[in-house]
Length: 512
Ligand code: NAD
Image (cartoon, rainbow, N blue to C red; front, side):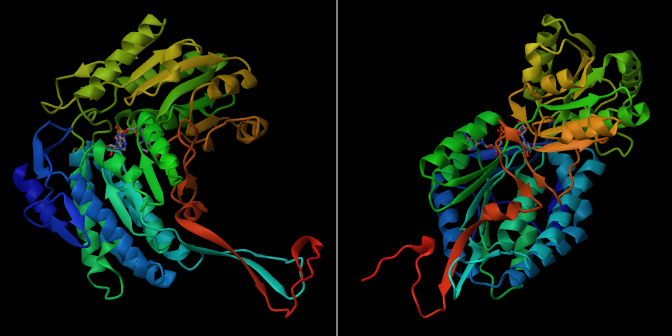
């Protein structure tokens, strides 16, 4: 393993010795505590590095602020060219970066490659966007006046990311931030720093080719929650984008709001799907299984709650149980595997706790055991669980970051939508139906209250072209496609008077 990881890191242009801090294009060892990085596959140590101190984080923020001064005036299409070339590096290194994602997160190869593909896709999107940062022109009420909006770079952006999408979420933020003219300071999850070091290394080889782009457009600070807190508190970062659990987002939101900064929050989900009597059950089984057990239930968009019409519930549960019993669970580097390990023992314990609680609340649990045979030693491998349970069981209110799917029954669509919306989180949702009125109702103002509302596909696997994010405790942030870029810019409304007179708005007379 040690040799394999070394050769991977070398191919990904990571310098030896491994450093946890990159500031102004220069790598330095973190002067903080040492951090061992484990693979969820077998709990073996992948590498060790040292974390950034508060002083190093302060320097990284200062470096981003300095880079901003020049970067903001570079034409946006030129910034887009940087992102285009970074996308090319990702294409060239997709296989190696995918392997590293699998080793560090435990997600299966196909999903790891998909994550890198998302990075490539967002780079393509951002390149086009770099020529489309449009402002509106409005009709002025005054003769000889032009009223228009311009979008300007906002400033350095702090990015705090979670372990389960260790590189895609950074890319969603960074590619857009760069074309918008904003340098980035990235604090990755302390569980997945190696993929972050690799991305930063690839980026630096691209930046080095540009003599008009300051190296400080991207800094990396590896460390734990305290560094995230520092980013949240620092007013030199007008925007902090934070992805992770609800408690983390709440803490970041309060700190950033206190200094009247802007936060973009991408927090926990508790995603539901309604399966109506007209649904195609073959399609249902496939979309439910991918959404519920993909990434071993560790996606923010993982399907956690199923509301099935009572007329088809027995049939659907029977079909799902058959599929669940035959899922290939094990080493995520094996192409035949569909379900890899949970990230660590804490995640395994949280799953056990939730299943015990579900049983106490009257749930009938199918599966959910930890596996020790036929899987790599040391990792936490579980059989995904199906839990038949009443729709008002309190456990349905919680996100447990593991493959547990609660199955409830309904007999009327409106009550199913009420149950669907009756949770604190509001990220992703879906309805499976061949009835157009049901589909439109679910998508309407009286339907799902989530940020992502799907028809006849599952809750996970979003495309980068849409704005990604959710409502309620999911935090309200939107990143990636559509007009999410506006969060990374400031808007100036310009009124230009070329009339030679001074008419006042609203017809006010003020003669002096
Ligand atoms: P986590 O909250 O434990 O950690 C996320 C990041 O926040 C890490 O980098 C961590 O060091 C940092 N952090 C923790 N406490 C902090 C604090 N007080 N201030 C600043 N930073 C802090 O989450 P995780 O276990 O890595 O990821 C799983 C969670 O993330 C789940 O709840 C999942 O739904 C959510 N998630 C959401 C999205 C989304 O787009 N909505 C995407 C991925 C993951």
